[in-house]
Structures are given as structure tokens and as C-alpha cells.
Image: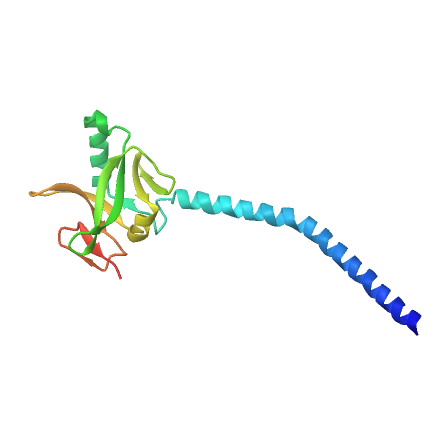
Length: 168
């Protein structure tokens, strides 16, 4: 009887060794495949985050007036040549958040770039969450001429001058 119990235990040990060996072999074969798939997905996600096509519903769009004014600035002022319009959102203004526009020649790692007709609009990643799907315009009025956010689907209200807004 002792021989049988010992034989059974040795058989179980052999079976466990085979299972572990098969598991290790399977893991060695699968690991490069999973690693390759993860790297491919990461590259796709990173490239999609860098530049959204202008047709995307979440893209920030520029009106013809905005594009025309940026081209005029590039042509008239040598200091503005090659610069991009940067849109950022800061706390403040009469409604809680305010839009800030400036001409910038630097693109940061977390920026999203929107380009149309050779003109570029740059939005940092944090501000982008506040202006997804917005439209940027350039207006000339009696009291001012300025770039402004004409429509912003993320804003639930704002001031009449359109320089500040509030979100839910």
C-alpha cells in the first residue's frame, strides 16, 4: 500500500512539473506578442492625441476671419511670421474661466495642433478639455478687434464680451 501512495504522489509531482513547464513555455511564446500589441496601441494612442484632424467633432475650428487675420499678421509683422495662435484657459473673468490668446512660436509636448490653410492653432492639453469642439473667430468692432471663442459646446454660460465662460 505504501508503494501505491508513493507512486501516486510521484505521479502528481511529475504532472505538476509538466504543467509548470507548459505554462512557462506558453508565457514565453505569448509575452512578445502581448508586448508588441501594447507598443502598437500606445503608438496609435499617442499619435491620435497629438493632432486631431479638423473634421473631428472635438477639433477646435477656426473661421475664415480668424485664418485671414493670422495670415495678415504673418505678412505685416516680421515678428509674427511663423507663429501659431495659442488658446489657453485660465481661472478668472466674470464667469469663472477666461480665454487667453497669444502668438507663440513654441509647441509643447502636451499641445494639440489644429491647422487650416497653413495657419496653426495650438491648445494645451488641460485647456483642450474646456474647448473641445469650439470655434475661434476674429472680430472687428468699434470698441475692439480680437480673437474670440465664437462657440463653445462645453460652456453653459458666459459674459456678453465672450472672453469668459462657465462650465457645469
